[in-house]
Figure 1 (cartoon, rainbow, N blue to C red):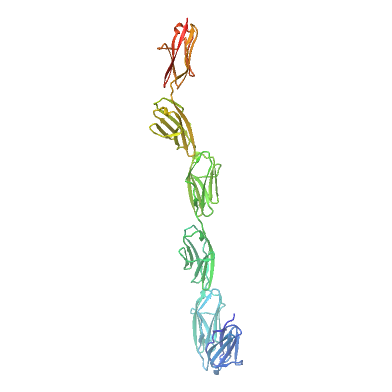
Figure 2: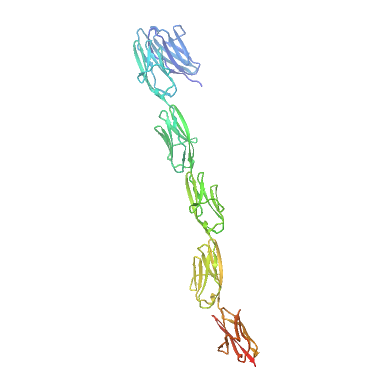
Length: 566
């Protein structure tokens, strides 16, 4: 690009003694082609052997090797290019006597970077020769490889190479000639760009906690600090605070969540440089049961089942199952798995001993959690003792009793002819542990029928049936028959009966006389058949024979006549 003209450093007015060499100097900036001209009292200088004019590296010089008094005056410098022109003026005073030195260009305040070098330069007016001495914080500096001083006519300079922090000081230049001396001072500050003495360590944290990153810095304060997550600059807020305390840079993050995981970069700068370094934050979530085990579960003995729950959280999650605080291991009976956040335990051929509290415990580096279920293995009810059929009389009390095996509690219900019965004036229903009964009070004809007991628990049911009948008085199916025999012949009277047992049989003769067994008589009652046998009929055997049958419900009789022929 093209640049308009500027004069960066103007020529300085100068006082000298006759026959001293003098150089007027201007430094310019601008786009070529630059044309430079020198004038005195409005008249342009042309090339001559009395003076030299040069222009290199943007520095224009006008030089007398030996000045005369008549060279005194105002000198004008003019520089021009296609964009315009610029001028400046300096006064040259040439005297007959010696002139003490004075600074026309003093040392400026200086900032430099550690490890670089510096060229300090002053311009001095006054009679030559001029000598210079340099002082650092008031102490004279001898020349060395590190410090090199130069003095050429009106220019004095000091070069310092490979600057160290200890080179920060107040530098003084003292100049002397035959007529006197002068000095000027300025401060040099050597600055170090920032770097990390201790980098921030990677952090691991759980959600809702606070995290602090710290970095120890080296370099020249003041520092500016910025923090980035991935490539986004962080902005201070209620959950983010950062800054510098002394030589420590920090970043505090409060109530962090999963989204705060990632790479963090710390960028530090001062007015001479910058540096950055990165670290990571890993937010780990403790395990959490998204779907818990059901609060309780009941299964039937011998069955198989599974328990399952769903767990969230950061890997690696380790799952352990317990029954009543004892850890369970994989076996024929138990198979455990944990895939896609689902924890499962498969259980086979269960027995009562497998009942208990089952606990699933999940653990990762961030924490642990557990949930549990009450697990019951039950046996279904089975009637181990059933009531026998009942024959009873009106007005009596009947008790039907059962024993149940299996896992209590049982839900026991009684039915008569399929209709449920409950305790009342008629029935007394009881059920306790493994025992169930119903008492029927004051039996009537309407109580006859089929009674059913049903026992139930969570895993099964069983029923048993019992009939209740009223006792019937005995009845003759076939009665004894009249009989005629000849003396000496055998006799057999026989009746077949039915009715509620037990039935008793009594034989009578001629109303009153009870017949007992004797040598000649045999009485039997088997399989509902009542028999009276006489081995030989006698004339006295003739008469009326009565067969009387009885049970709790009543008595019946039948009569037959035995005739004995002589």
